[in-house]
Length: 378
Length: 215
Image 1 (tube, rainbow over the protein chains, first blue to last red):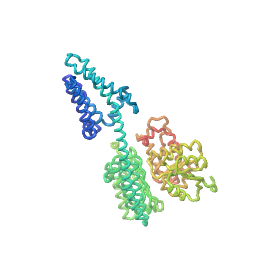
Image 2: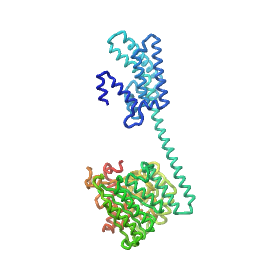
Image 3: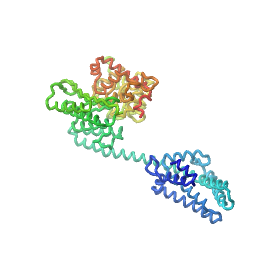
């Protein structure tokens, strides 16, 4: 794109104009609105740009009336340039305006410090008036001196420089105020977000807990639910709002199991996760098998706390589901539980993994799942 | 430590409810020599009363548990710290450990377990809860999977030995030290020394190696 624009300079320079226009009116790669779009879209910005254009036009008209050729083609093009640069300035994204500001602050005449007195302002006004009027008179004489390219240059620089000297401090200040304003707005939004979350979720749960005060298991369940939600909200905000039924990673899916078991069976499930990987058929079989194991433990062990440890390593995913309940002899499992166990084993074998159940009466139970990962997963 | 001399414990937590809860859980088994609800008071009182063990909240206004540790570790190096919290981001917990706490447990720990943890901390051992073990495994994760250490100034410090990894995994699976010893066929003392070694590595390791906390 840029190369095309440079090449087109050779054939009349239309490409340069086109490139500038595209820059102003096309959104940058990582933004959703263009520079021009931002200015036109914001009523206040539009007003500033219009007022400024009117003021410049008025100056030109006055000059015209004074007999200077203020409305010639050069004057019009400078009007366009001035308005254009204002549009760019006001509509620039924070990153772009930061760059502009840096450039400006580096310039000695323009860099403004707050609290400079009226003397500085007067000096500025005089300098800019001299520059502007000088520039315009130079430009207006173009018709009289053919081939006075140097004068055009001097006139143009003086004209634009005059405006810069006059308006730069104001622009810089407005820009600064604008960014402070943005920051404050973001902060206020965060506060409102927090308040609404506390209201919607925490206060409601507290109310429910008060109502259910006579039922310890319900109180525990509610408290766990709230704790989990709050923990998520504080430490893992990216996962909020995603659809829980379609976890994208193994860790999300395991968190889903934790939620389900705690909510449905009133037991605590202490989930420790190390590492993560995307979901595929094999890992989702692993997650279902873990769900069954946790469910079994929640239903049969008589234990109120389960420990689940899941680790994703480069070559293998392993999960341990452990309870300290009454335990059993794996060889003498009643028929109705045999089915569950074998379905767990089948699931895992189908995807190339394995299950080991270690338990004895009185020592609790631990189910170990191991699922090798193919090299392609990484 | 003899049975007759009760351990002197100091509680730092900004929530009065939690402080009284901890006192109630501990009962008469230890002597609670004081409590504080903010960093400055905590530093002053700990330096004055020299408890054996400080139970330290990870999150507090004014810099959290880490600020207390950093202030006291030089003036009262004999005081041992056990970090205690409801639920935290891995970085915060690891930060407190790196600042000098000898262990981390969550506040839903039962009274007897907490007492056991306090005794072990006072004996100079490290106390890793399953969650901390998970955080540490994550932090020392081997990104290549080949056991090849990433380039580093001191590979000894930046890698866990296979045995240390095994011990941490068993802790994360919810095993008590005694069960770990039985499982691995080693003594409880050896398990403790592995955990202490991990703690030392954690406190000395090059921050850049612990990629998972930096992100």
